[in-house]
Image (cartoon, rainbow, N blue to C red; front, top):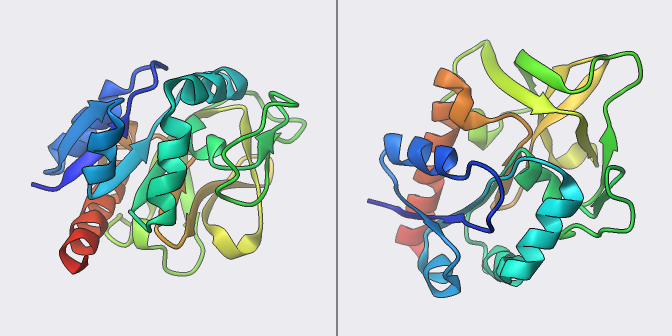
Length: 208
């Protein structure tokens, strides 16, 4: 079984992501042990709540530095919901609280005129051929709960949803993948995305 480290920095229901990864066949472990994270074939950063509080908790745990380290080593890395947002440079939700800066761009409030948060199922509009969604059904429905979303370069956007206009739903940059939707709550689409990530991690580890 492929070892996947789910970063445990004390925020939200992190076990739901761990259980979903186990469901698709991974040896997923919720951990704050930097040594175990370094040994993993893939690393997952989930998150719920406010950007600033999550970023502060991640830094306090020391896992921010480990996240940078594994990304620099091209270990497959998956950010989920707030975990996706933390990968960017910062967020309008918490001005002055820098993000990890692994991905280019800023997280911004959802457009005026829509209900915040978006708390619903929405269909994903693929851009190109995203590896994350290679096994997902068509149409691919996913579950969202968020008031902010990434404003980033089109080059890394692999899926959007329509919510008062196109909203970034997934990105890929090298071995870094991220979803604004919750794969662990997104039925067939979500499990397919997690399975694709585990397959990528397994292939990467085998090639190392």
